[in-house]
Length: 193
Image (cartoon, rainbow, N blue to C red; front, side, top):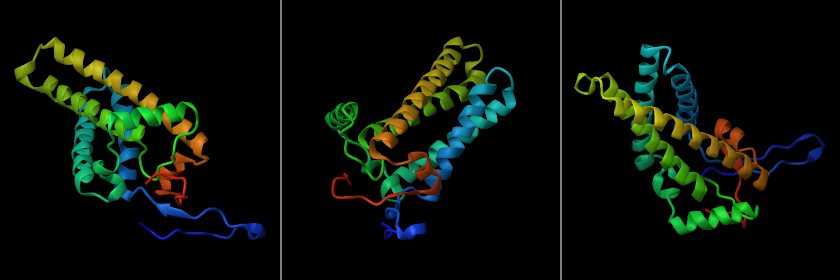
């Protein structure tokens, strides 16, 4: 983990120290996925070829993220944010009371969301590819699964955004800025690992 960094502001008041949490790959992956998913979702029925290219790019990003989830730095690894269902449920109960612990990396609900989104995107990518293959020509169920998965992913995105807003409010931390800069407030004694 990087050493905390402080900067003096006007008036001699130092803002809280920060630490690097999100590495450049995770940030690039996140924002590229946001743009590509939005583009693919909005062009699905209108621009076949650009939609397919965006789908292939998303599939490549997902493959790289899985590798990074196994071999990347601490907060990028799946092992750092996958929790038991009871831990996730307890975290969500605490969140409803605005008493959830702050996590430096993904919190238990955020870790579950990462996995849910990755699974949804794999299903979308696989069915999208199948729709272009001659072996599945005319298979309406594949198109139905593809479309349903896209809308399910959109619902997960909405939940993700809601979770980011709640956690940002609850912990007084701009999580969108953290995903841009890669830095978050240094952990205090009340924070979880």
